Image (cartoon, rainbow, N blue to C red; front, side):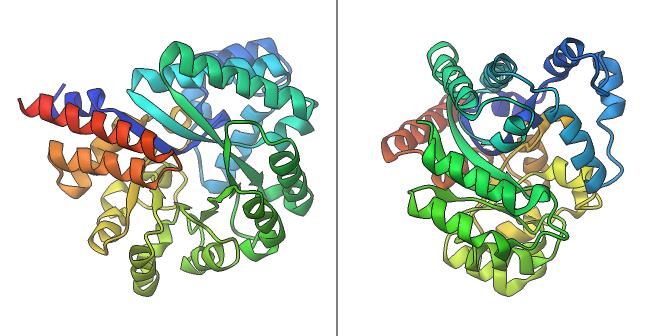
Amino acid sequence: MTDLTAFIAGLPKAELHVHHVGSASPRIVAELAARHPDSRVPKDQETLAEFFTFRDFAHFIEIYIAVVELIRDAEDVRLLTYEVARDMARQNIRYAELTVTPHTSVLRGIPDLAFMEAIEDARTAAERDLGVVLRWIFDIPGELGLPAADETARMAVDLRPEGLIGFGLGGPEIGWPRPQFKPYFDRAVAAGLHSVPHAGETTGPGTVWDAIRELRAERIGHGTSAADDPELLAYLAEHRVPLEVCPTSNVATKAVASLDEHPLRRMVEAGVLVTINSDDPPMFSTDLNAEYAIAARLLDLDEAGVAALAKNAVAASFLDEAGKARLTGEIDAHLAAWRG
């Protein structure tokens, strides 16, 4: 282990762009697949690695949905959620805003209230047992269209669980323009939820503009193509709209050709507030520590630079001010102890 890798491993962190089902480790996916033998998901961890090799973004969505279909009852939901938090604790992730897609689980037959109770039970247990604070972003599965948007908004606003702080939009961008989802984001924002849609991952910067202008985005999920529009980068920097950057994910889904071609440096040099995230870590054979190491290489960062990047995530989070001060203090203390 290099010094920088060791520093990252011990660094207290926040993560803002990580998916609930997409965070299921091979062990948990294999266990769920064994419990539901009619699934096409492999039952052993070794075969899962091949299963999680994606041809393109559309294939990724296909595989992701196959894993979603393993979550069939409230106990599956609770088990998954708590085990995701356990994996986070191993990485010194102190706070995470986990993107959850309740509509797909409800379609599988899990009652909406049972789903809410399961994630909340896991959330409180994770904070008590593991010291990991979880908050939820409910996102619309865009590929299921406006009925899914309506149902997601209903669950977010009418059944709002205690840990819910944000409203998002995922799934494929091509064929699903952002403006059509405006009424549902308007409803969520009016209810006090933060707007955090995915945009500009597999389409151009126009999708990011739509997310800002039509969906009132406070942060942008991915925003990879924003680097192609200097005016957009300037806007993001001036208005402090953070980007949730997920380097390995962008390569795995073919949104970016290679890590060396990732636009992260251009975003930073334009003054944009960037955060580093893992997206669907087991599916991409990564974790947040690995993503920080990649970012450190791409940006030529030392320990102080990595700590500053970690503080970006705290600043861009929806954690309360006392929580932000506490976690920022932990980061500063880690850096000071390392230097000492």
